[in-house]
Length: 273
Image (cartoon, rainbow, N blue to C red; front, side):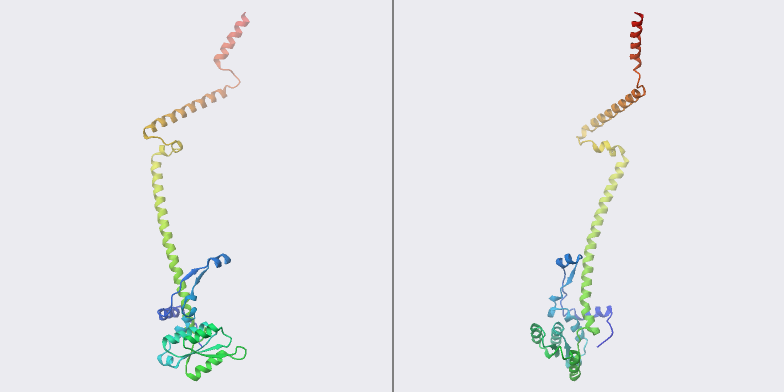
């Protein structure tokens, strides 16, 4: 076993090493999970990977780094199913013997699948036996290399290539969205610039930007002057009425001067009579 954890560079190297052997599985969005969790859920479809899981990544990265002599001695692994099939597949591709320690009660599909890839299966009892001890003994007796399911730097780096592909896929999606957003911003900028130019033109000719001009109905070009004259006359009449009302309010309580004279004259004639 190795206690050294891999670095990001190790994961990148592992991807270069195994990319020609595996599928780059798609990233799918799950609507049911997104609604249930209340957030957007994306899934890396490693169920479509060779062997039916991501385990082929770690097993292949580990075995590819063995020397020719080490591969000639074979590999030993212990697993209940997915890692067992992954090691059997990788060993078959690379032409080395694989021995897999599996529990007696493992799913029949996993047992049959592992055997179908040419691996030798050694069964053990979960309640009484220690699978790691059995695998270590077999590896020592045969001089074979041990391929553990998780706690080995080469295996971890290989499994990490799934996350590497996921990050790159999401970055590509964001880049597409960013490109679309930039196009939208450029279009909005052009519209804003056009509107600003129109506003500057209206400011240069304020009579066209007046509220009356904006509210007046559309009319043929030859009748625009007539409408403008009519609106000007109406405004003039309105101002005249307002001045007349102002004078009447100032003289409220007194009759107009001409009528006072007439009333006074009539009263004077009656007095004289």
